[in-house]
Length: 100
Image (cartoon, rainbow, N blue to C red; front, side, top):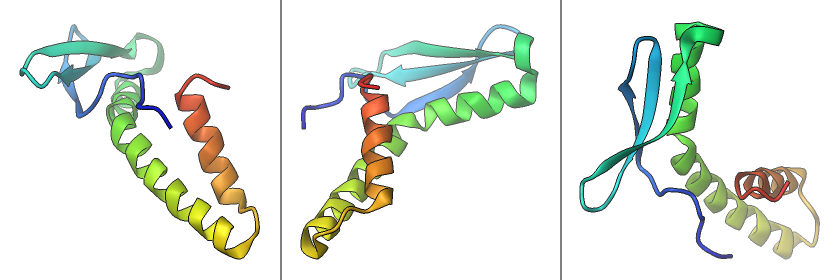
């Protein structure tokens, strides 16, 4: 599997304009860039903050799910069966890569 094409983590949340949470990534050189904004104008501040937290966790979730999938695929291979949880993990990772 090739390396992910998205901006590597960690991502963090900072306060942006009024009622906006900005999700930023910091490069290895220490330079920060905004990669997403969650505005409260449509959903309310509590939901915008929850959306920002979910987005900021995306690189960590991707890495954790890939690790779980490796374990599940080894288990599938050893048992000679297909596991629904492995299919769900494969589908989620494909979605994250823009393949579905």
